[in-house]
Image (cartoon, rainbow, N blue to C red; front, side, top):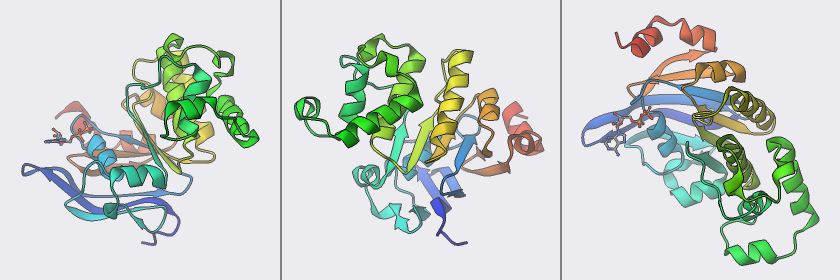
Length: 248
Ligand code: ADP
């Protein structure tokens, strides 16, 4: 298969920990501009797959390509972040003692020392980027408030905004709605759909109502391989998926 229009291309990927195959001959292709939901029971290999894509874990076998022809197995974790893969872990990690706007600014300016980022003049382009991100995450009214004062859901959105500030081509988002209210969950679906208009996105998620809201193609992992792939209706009607979720 051609890699040309893919943002992510995994073929025959395997990784073992002490002889246990956490990822087993996994193949997964994400087109440029696509948003995909990854589901699967605990231990299915979702985190390990994300670790492989971000360079945290090296596969024992298989191909991992990004943005067409960039061989990720030749890059380390720091390189891969610079190449344009942003990862959001489940728990929000924002700079609690800085205001919301400065959190975005610190991410936008990159991993330089904090003072130059906060005190140097901002270019018009940087101001526009920050305004654009506020339009997406809808926290403009909280710009000057300490990040510590945000709700759990708002911190998750701020962290997604911080990822956007780094201008990634591919965003990996791990269980974004865990612990959110229904209203926050709905808002998160809206926000991710808006982001997916201009970015490729992978969302690992357990909340099937949320996955339905996203309305995207679903890949169900099990024992380190793809068990089923298609619309949520297709995957959730697949007998094998029902079996692994019910533990029969
Ligand atoms: P998921 O995210 O779908 O719950 P994981 O990717 O975390 O699944 O784990 C897949 C399997 O690999 C699990 O059985 C887990 O115990 C095992 N595993 C993951 N990381 C390690 C590790 N560093 N050492 C040993 N086993 C691991």
